[in-house]
Amino acid sequence: MHPLAYERLKRVLNDKKLVGPDEMCEYYPCHFHGQDCTWCFCPFYPCEDEQTGGEWVLKKDGGHIWGCSDCFWIHKSEVAKELWRALRRFGIARVEDIEERKEDMKKIFSALKEKYPPD
Image (cartoon, rainbow, N blue to C red; front, side, top):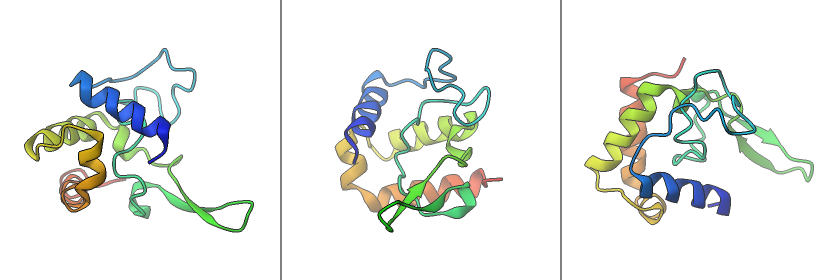
């Protein structure tokens, strides 16, 4: 996990609250006005699911990287809230839990997508 993602997710999990729109962020709105910025760094990255709006992007070196700039799904208020509740239900309280419990994260991802299908 990228160090910036680790630190951001750690802060969110430690603060134990949703962020909502972060209008103080220099990049806001990076996806859409009113977005929920709680999961600025997505705990599902890389989900590799094009239904979310993400896609494989060609890098200059010829490799590929998962790009999320067109993913609005995780930033919808209802999805952010339900993800927060799901992490609590599964007892995922640390960034290390996100990294170590991939199968549980896949279950959460699938359940969220079913309840709140990406547009």
